[in-house]
Length: 372
View 1 (cartoon, one colour):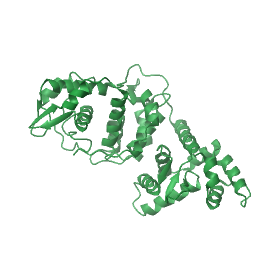
View 2: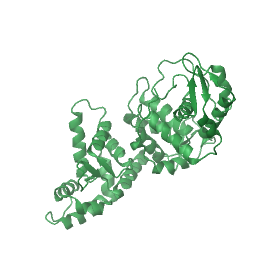
View 3: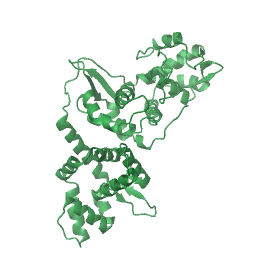
């Protein structure tokens, strides 16, 4: 529902609270007058820009978590969870502060109680979300200029991961590959396989701290680890008796033509697999292409904007997570292009996939996958 429709059913007490927040001058005893005044105020570009300008960093985080989530109806638990994420660094009275965020957001007219038998449900007006996101983006671009000219060389991996699934399955279809005592393919087999993949990676040296991002993240490099896990999750490969082999389902997969559904499923799988370690991933995956649309954004600008909203994961710092777990993987998944400028500074821009399919996709509702 749009704001105008929602206001008609809104309790006059909340209408008064919103009117007081925005300083609307109207007849407080006339609901019709209140609604008319609020409509002209809440949807006004200047009002929204001023509201965004006054938000604290935590409030901005909460706003982005709210409006980048494409659901129009959320439960109180959903809203409190978002406030909790935004208040991650708060040590005391976090729950109390989260409830204050909810109350303040209602006074701002960001969401309203649903008029139904279901208690504790709130709806976000359809025509409020986009203006707030655009106001935040305009504010961001006042301080962070996009590079409009493309770098001389850049990388766009597109759907190469999907092609490499087939390469991996073909490799296994020749014969099962023996596994080490740790459960990974021997390095000579990895090196043979990696020669056929679109993006070249090197076998990992032993690293005890690599965990949290998949089944064999400690044994394989980032991109191949994700590819392996995707095949394992779909039961196209199996580990049995010290070997990894293609399954009958994997053989059937080899016979199929490429489809957009496979590509989209791969993106969703990555989101679900990494979301446990990076709870803010759904927001980041929506926000980065929003920032990087219409030009190239520097890695430094992304870092300065987003690192405060990323929680460390054991030995992974917020910077490591942003660069290696989010941006790098979004490049591998064809959601970002990456290049370098004359000063060897890394630049990113959004791809068609991130501006089209991802724009409709809602990672906030995805459940996490735990492979081990």
